[in-house]
Amino acid sequence: MNLESFANMFVAGITLGAIYLLMAIGLTLVFGITKVLNYAQGSFFTWGGYLTWILTTKYVQWGYPVVIPIVMLVAFCAGILFERVIVRPLRRFSGWETTAIIVTLGCALVLDNLALVLFDPLSKTIPNLMEGAFRFGGLSIAKHNAIMIVITIAVLVLLWLFLEKTRVGMGLRAVSQDITGARIVGLPVDRLYGYSFGICTALAALAAILLIPRTLLYPLVGWTTLLKAFVVIVLGGLGNIKGTLIAAFMLGQAEIFITYYVGGMWALPIFLVLLVATLAISPKGLFGRW
Amino acid sequence: MVNITKALFASGGLLLLAILPVFFHSDPYIMGVLTLCLIWSMVAASWDLIVGYASVFAFAHLAFFVIGGYTSATLAVYAGVSPWIGMPVGGIVCASLGFLIGIPCLRLSGMYMGMVTFSIQFVLPTVIVWAGPGRFLNFSTGGSFGLHRIPPIEILGQAFSKAELVPSYYLAFAFFLVFIVGIYGVIRSRIGLAFVTIRDAENLAKSIGVDERKYKLMAFAISAFVAGAVGGFYAHYYGTISPALLSLDAFLLAFMMVLLGGLGVFPGAVLGAFSVTILNELLRPALLWRYIILGVIVIVTMITVPEGLMGIPALVRGRLSALRSTGLIGRRGDAAQDR
View 1 (cartoon, each protein chain N blue to C red):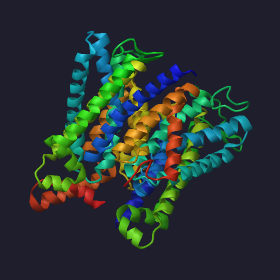
View 2: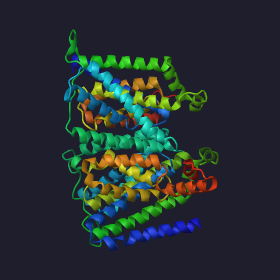
View 3: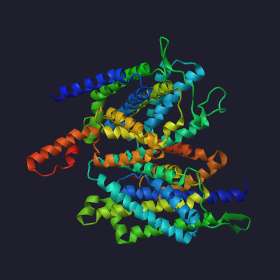
View 4: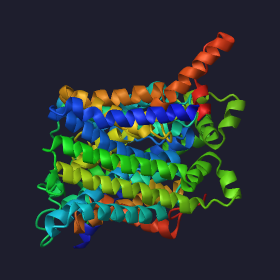
């Protein structure tokens, strides 16, 4: 392997890590605030991909500057609707966290099969964000990958600012820390739950727009990404943002090199073995602090 | 009084199961579905033991079912080992795996353990496909097409394959009796008592010295053993086994059985297994729309009766008494507090 392909793989690893980070942060955000582990997140990823395919390839050929905001907005609304119609009715009962697992799984089943019925099982492709490559002396980096990293960083910074500086963001953090306290001071808890789901699905849709041009689009595409995001969350130490960040980029790198040397289908099995081995040694993940 | 009613229901149910073939013995389709119901009942009941009673979010149960099936099947196909040895071996392999997976996973709290064990099921197909034809010299899992021509179980020259409808049903029924009674025995024993104490009163359990880790590992091993052994029966009965059993919809169907019956309420999982299996068969004509309809049914059921079928009597009773005493509408929370 020469230097150029090594550099390319390194960049590809960073971009993959960025994708996992988007998914993982969405999942932890929702789990932290609503205590729901959203197994339907992968299907929102898939549907984000299909919506992008419809808007860029199938019916109209719009450019990404228009498509990305539309898809994210639709996903945000879908997330809020999902919380309102599916999750909120569950919260009336005790022990609803277990019920929420099967209900979100049921939604995943419906959404995946709906994609199968509506768009047939054949794989689709969606265009890159930008064709061609940047050249730095002897090195070349695909423009798509470079833009992917820029967008991810921008979104993460915006999300951080939103959570730190805005009233809604502070409300979200308050709910995740102490739900009773949040209720006492009169925060609109139900609406905040809705926002957290909306943000989560919007991030999933963004992840799909960024990742799917490099792979293929098919009805079950979201599952592997979701499962890898699970691994990232647990490995990074639960609820530890810094740990999640490092774990996402580590696994992104690992996946690229596993794909190069062993084959892409082994990425998830090797991740799991790594995860179980890590847990056996350090029960709180790599950087955990509960 | 309640115990007598329960005993009556139980013996009535078992009697019904025992005489069902008298009515349906000529219909291969119905007999097949009934046998399938019995098989899934055992899987669901053992899953309920760990999720419902031991309150461990162990979602790798179907993985154990499939591993047990493949173990017994490959032993029979490539080494000529009798299923009567293969099935317990499959069970023991699964019990050991369950134990080994349990050790690191039990360090995680509820939902996170769910994530990790859930992933195990989705990783297993990769391994099965990898160990397909041509990988090893004299052994193969058959890859993504699965393993075929698995010899059936035999007793005194009588084969129990898919073609032998009534004998296979009764063999399944015999296994059903053994495992269901066994699981009930575990629930009523000191082990089951420990499970319930840990589930319902964790601090009390700790204070009187119940070793949570030990009992949860036991739950892993016992439930995995049953799943593995039943997986062996499944493989020998159908004569074929494939990684398709590890798909998302299979997971959802099986987990739905546990939840529909009622989590941690003993014969609930059996009721759930029968309802879901029959429902799944009824929806077969819907073709591609089948899983969409099934998913919607799952969602609507869980939103309306989250306590499952076993919770309905309490729900109704709560409603009635509330209506009688106050004249107002009953509170939904009553059923939950009854448990």
